[in-house]
Amino acid sequence: MTARSIRGAVAVTLATVLSLTAAACSQPGGSDGSGSGSGAASTVVGIAYEPDSLSPLLGYGKDGNSKIFDGLLALDGDMKLRPALATALPEVSDDGLTYTYRLRSGVKFSDGKPFGAEDVVFTYRTILDEKTNNASRTELDAVKSVEASGDDTVVFTLKYPYAPFAQRTVLPIAPEHIAGKQDVNTGAFTTHPIGTGPYLLTKWSKGEKLSFRANPDYWGGAPKVKKFTMAIIKDDDVRATRLRSGELDGAILPPNLAKGFARGSGMRTYAATTYDYRTVTLPTHNKVAGDTAIRRALDVAVDRRAMVDSILNGEGRPAYGPVPTDSEWFTKGTERTHDLAAAKKILDEAGWKPGKDGIRTKDGVRAAFPLWYLTGDKLRQDHALAYASDAKKAGIAITTEAGTWEVIEPRMKQDAVLAGGGSPADPDFDQYTLLKSSLAGDGFNNMAWYDNKAVDQALEAGRRSGDKAARKAAYDTVQRELVKNPGYTFLTHIDHLYVVKDRFGALTTQVEPHDHGLASGPWWNVEDWTPKK
View: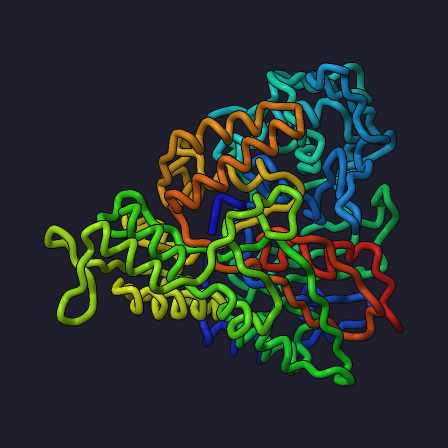
């Protein structure tokens, strides 16, 4: 996983799942009314991960759909920006350095206190403060200053004309009168947030569920789904079982499990196109995985199409980098064809010679390294096993290992990881944090410790230019450099599949990030649902 704010912080053990199942059967509504049996106005969905924090100051909801909060802007079903806490899209100066937002009047936080310009200023200034533990701070690098002009206007001044800046202002706004009175990193606000959004958090049972109730005073109108629960079920099979048993109203599932819910079963399956990729990190500090020849050989030894067909049941596309092949930002000609003979030739020419067991060695170093994947994540497990199988055919021994993020994270500098990432809208959103050398070792940023000066320069050029053609040229450079020296082996872009009960009618999805159902899925706009009686 990358530096996106979502991580699998706590695993749900089978014992915990069984106890929750028993509780749900005996008390369908639960003490907080979160069970699916508590009426048409109550919804429970199964997701794969939970956030580390519920504070937008620490990264929660930075890509929108946070439910508890609103941003100045939001994304509609077609991923187009629309006003939220702002009354309109920003007024942008001719030089692209000043963005002015007019704020919606009469908006209140869920504690009844009014929302105003000072809350916007507080939110952005706090995130930009180096004392704040926000791993996504570099996404706001362009901001020079943010100032209030009266109670209803906020002006951002940029250091350079950062083209996608408006898309960054879907970031949720925190209340200064609460979050500003406590430690930003450890205060109660991180787990007991107050926002302006359509839902209020009623309970967060870590590792189990997030429970919400509708905000009756929401400025956009009170939601008809009065109780909304996200059940945190890391194991794909368990999530499918609980959906089938009726405990869940919907869930995100891998393709092979989603296919088990046939039409006519009272369920509907929704497929969402995504930027969500699976990739193998090849740590620069590993003598084998950091070797350019090994990296290049693996890049062509892997059979991406077979992974799409067999693992994803066709619900996805081969990936050659963070940018999907159908994006306007994808660089044509950087596709890598599966070619085992070419992989062997690269290794032979670089001095990696096969041993008696078929595994290559060079200067006494065996071409072998471990590959970690997240326990319970069937898609990652299947990708890891297929990758290791393809690698072995080229003479590279990869040992797959399962673990929690607590086990995996300390090993990322030396060991490979079956990771995920992806963010729609703009290439800067993904590539900068994934590849910038200065971010290596910063949480889940640049997990491979990738270090390429040409890529660093292109990333800065793409970020700082306001000219689309110049930006396209910069990101073309990045993608071509990843062919020459791939610090990651990108495998697939995955279409997300969701199964949801029919009682909610026809729903919609957005183009999704690497999200695991936390803010995406058909419930991206649950506040607009009208459940059937």
